[in-house]
Image (cartoon, rainbow, N blue to C red; front, side, top):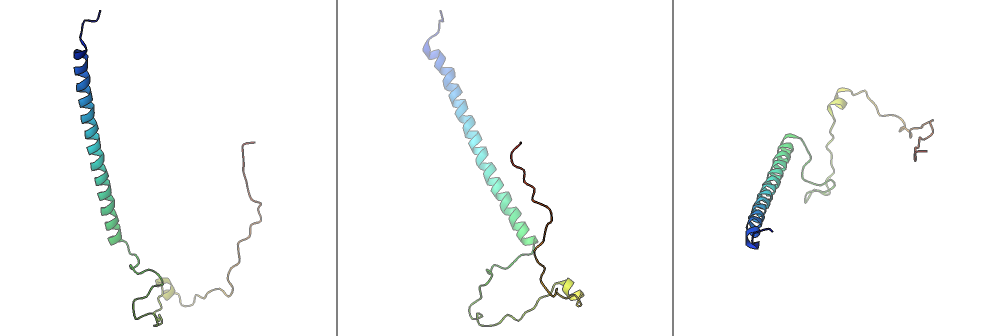
Length: 111
């Protein structure tokens, strides 16, 4: 009936196991390098964006340097649009909340 010994059937299985282990090691190496490359790309991109785009200083809002806590802030900054239109005045009264004459639309369920 099947004329082979058990030793003959185990050799190909052992080779397949070694091949599978080698393949898994290659995939693990590839995954590690992909993660390292992705993190490097994110770091480079964020550094380039930080250098190219204007932002705020590293000092948190509301904090003062030592010795300047009692000095008033007298600097007044104007945007270019404010400097170009000096006759523009703020409204006499703040606008109220928006009113809506339409009833709310609610869809719930399919029936």
